[in-house]
Image 1 (cartoon, rainbow, N blue to C red):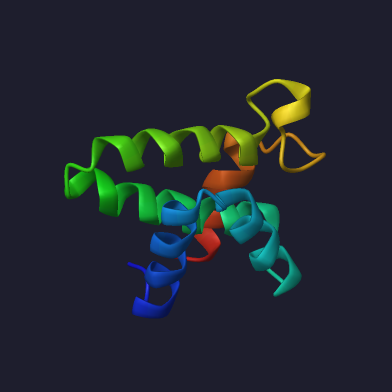
Image 2 (cartoon, rainbow, N blue to C red; image 1 turned 90 degrees about the vertical axis):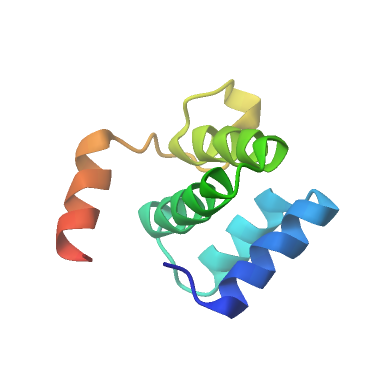
Length: 94
């Protein structure tokens, strides 16, 4: 569950088409790549539950860019994020 401030940041980034910039802001604030992924995934679940299909699609694309499962020019991080890293993060930060 995201706090209201983080949720507003996502809503603002969606409205202005600046999700990549938001991800980089999180990194500048000290979040790791996998932590950024987790934040985006939490917001994706929120818009999915609200049946906001257009926003859901944008966030799904963002998740792929965070992981690195996209074209090389679209990647947001140099490192390819593995499922094992995501699962380990979830276990230790649940």
